[in-house]
Figure 1: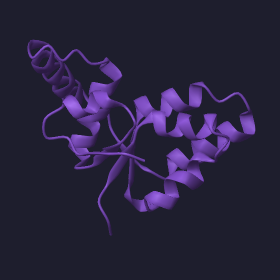
Figure 2: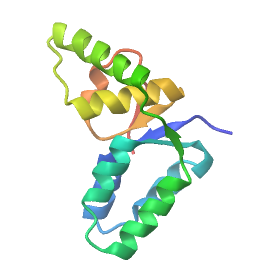
Figure 3: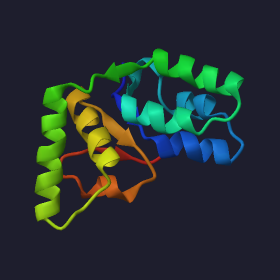
Length: 128
């Protein structure tokens, strides 16, 4: 079994904009049992899908991934990381901080094209 990877929404969205099947593109790089997800990514991806059939396919894909629960203690980690980054003049979008905290909690790397994640110490970032 390989390392766990949380796929950022921009990977899904980038594949869709390139007329590629995001599920196929992701599973070419990461085995399904190593894919971690969080509610923020799921919501960001599914809200933009216009065709119900394709939305249902992506929703089914998400149901097969390891979901990181967004508990009260996770939200405490989110505000604490946001506070720390803000003091370092690294102001990141809240959803990116949630994604990073979910990845850290799962012991997963984040697959993303977003450079914001490079600003978070200790987070492993991989490019698609």
